[in-house]
Every structure is written in C-alpha cells, then in structure tokens.
Image (cartoon, rainbow, N blue to C red; front, side):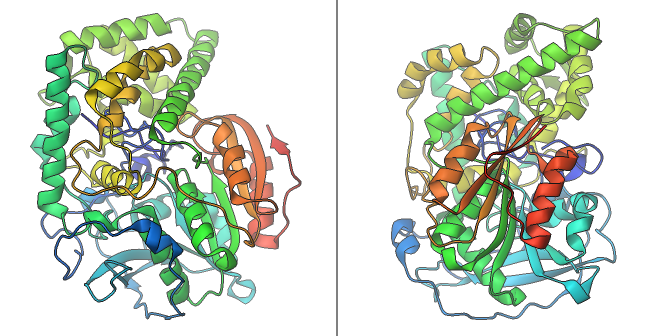
Length: 542
C-alpha cells in the first residue's frame, strides 16, 4: 500500500524548474498525487545520509495537545553559521547541480522533543538567498512548499525565478522540516523494496488482497520504526511550527513573514494558532482544508482529481484527435491490474504506478500532453511515460534511488492524525469514493489505511488553526486545483478567524495560483508581501 497523495507533487523540486507542476491532499497508496501520500521534493540518506536526531532514544509520542497549549519559550536568538551549500543529495530529489553562489546554507539545532528539551536535539537544514535591495529589506520570507515531506532546501532554488521580485526586499529562506531530507529524514525501506511496494496492488477486491495490502502497510511501518524510530514521535506539524518560530528568532526577525504552499498552508495555520502575535505578512496558496478529517480530505481530493481529469479530457478533445475517454482510462487501469506492461529498465507498469502517473500529470496543464501520449502508449503496451510520471510522484530518481518524500509524508501524517482505519471500515467506504471518481476513488479510499500499524499515536482529529489577534493572512484558492480543492481556501479563511483570513480566488487549472503566471494573482500577492496592501475581500483573478 502506498502513501496518500501529497499536496505538492513528488518531484516538484526537479520538474518545476522546467515546467510548473506541483500539497497535503489525499492519503493514497499510489504516489505523490494524492492528498497525503507522495512528495518527491526531498530525501535524506537512510543510514547516516543526513543529520540525525542526536541523543534521545525512541519513546512514546508526547501529547501534542499539551504542546500546543504550552506557553511559548522566551526569545532564544540561536546562532546560525551560514556557508556555501553542500553538494546535492540524490535522495532529496534535488537538481544535479548545487544551487549556486547566490545561496548559502546553515543548520538550526532544535530540541528533539519540545516538551522535554533536555532529551537531545535535531538538526534542521536551511537555505537562504539574500535580498538584492538590502537598503529596502523587509526581513526574511520563509517558504514551505508542501507535501508534507517536501525539501525546501532542494525546492526553493529551483523556484527562485518565480520569486525574484520578492527577493528584492526579502531574504528568501526555506528548510527541510524535521523528518525530511537533511533534517533527520525518515527512511523505511531500501530502494528495491520501495520499487516493489509502489508497484503492488493498492485497490484490493478480495479478502485475501485486503490482507496482503494491510500486511505491506504494517511491514512499511515496521521499517520506519527500525530505521527512524527515534524521530517518529517528534515529526508532527506542531513540532515543525515550533521549529519555524525558533528559525524566526535565529534569523533576527520580530515577525515571521511566510509563504506556504499546499501542506505548507496547514503548517502556517498551526503556526498562526500557536504564535498569533508573531505572524507577519503571510500568504497561503493551494490551501488545505483544516476542517477535514482524513476521510473527508481523501474524499475531497478524489473530487478534486476527478474535476481536474474532466478538465483535461475536455481540453484534450478540443485540440487532439487521439484523446481517451474516462471509461477507456478505467478499462486501461483494470487491464494493468491483471497484465502490467513494460515500463523500461526491466520494470513493469502496474495499475498502481499508472494511477500515480496519471495523478502526477494533473498537477499542471504543462503535463497534459505527456498524459495524452502516455495513455496512448500504455494502450499499445509501452508504459515508459506513465512510469516516469509515477516515479516522479513517488520520489524515485533516474538512478533508481528514492528521496525521503513519501516516508516523510507518511510519518508526518501519522504523527498528526489520530484516526486509524481498518480494512473492513475502508471496504465499506469504497463505493462512496468510487461514485465520486471512477479513476481515483478506490485509491483514495484505500490510502486511509496508511497509518495502520504505525508505532506512534496521532495528535489530533483535525488541526486547530484559529489565530485570533494575528495579522491578516492572504488565503488564495484555485477553482481547478486537484490536490487541494478550492473549498479548502474558504474554510481555512474562516477557521483563521475574522479579520485574519482574507480569501482570494484564482479561476484556473493546476495546483496553486502564484506559480501559474497569472498577473492578477502575482500583483495581489506581491502587493501584500512587499507593500502590506491587503486585497479586497472576494477578489477574483481569472
């Protein structure tokens, strides 16, 4: 069983520099596309490939409810030593070249357990490019690109051109959240085991297949505990939010100026709840619905991907002669479930990998032509294009090595959410999911088992993002977003509180709004971040 689909597509750090694909969406067992499942932007070497948590043996998860209510610590102003960035780590899903001379890296030392700060520390990897107009510098602008599980250290340099106007007055800063990439990245299985795991059937139809799926999920969880057990209780979103406040102090900023994408909006909401008076100018783009539990989130993501698929099919039919129908896609996936086709390098394109590849392609219109060609090729027995798309979602590099994207996504999701679903419970839900999406419904439903057998209890049923007293947060929703459906933006704005959440709409396609290139969106977001101009309520960009 695979992890749910992430809000930010896996491989985003690599592909987005050339195209514009891209939060926490469904928790599916296929790849990056689903809300909770796969992100490719990060990765950390398994045995010692990145800074590990120091001290502190594995222990039961502390109550995150008590952590959230605990008074913030006094300003600590920890020191950061900035230097040239290390060579890219292939397991981060990073580009082949270092980010360049404009960028510098540092390590922030944070408590492994904020409830017991004497129980060891954990190193948080950071990256920065200084403002180009220092005389008019506002401060640091901290980015989180989603996942959960995406590497900010790998992703920010790849997106840098999109933020060059913001860089005039901000130092652009990002980081690998705890449990991700170089920040004690979670690892669970080796590369060969992951090949088998992501290829295996994720939509069981019989009791025997259900048992096999649950067995794989539990084996995955045991691998995570074996390789990363000391950090699993401490990788939740509340912990990452506290790391961001420590980061704010280390950067010397009185307020946290923040740009959160996809799952990064949930992280930003939790930060605003814990530290409302420390929120500076903040933008949430591709917004996660904080009111949804895992089942509601997965069902919403199924609707979102179904909407995006329909938009793709309509656009394809208007411009191409070889466009499939949804019924043909369903039939193709059914055939691949029984008879996989060659996917290159001796691997076979299975139903799971093909579904993941289709989802990956719906993150951006830039991928639609690849999807058309990939579906036609798969019908003719050639699975290489859909395989490549699926690999990107799963965080698999061309060298066959995986980033920590999916493992991190699962670990963070299971540390956050307390819900644990049995196979019998999910089987009862499958018909409702299938009615919402014939292509993605089964995958989304069975992704709900991702935390079965997980060794750490989850912290909440839903995150609290109420932030009374915080500065305005600009919340941007995209009507065609597959991974974080549009409705989530309105719910986030309301949950943040009156006068805090300022909702804005982009009528477009793909995951997110700012990186779409829409000039109306860019003017509004830049106007707030650079000049403090809050867009009028109900602003719509087309």
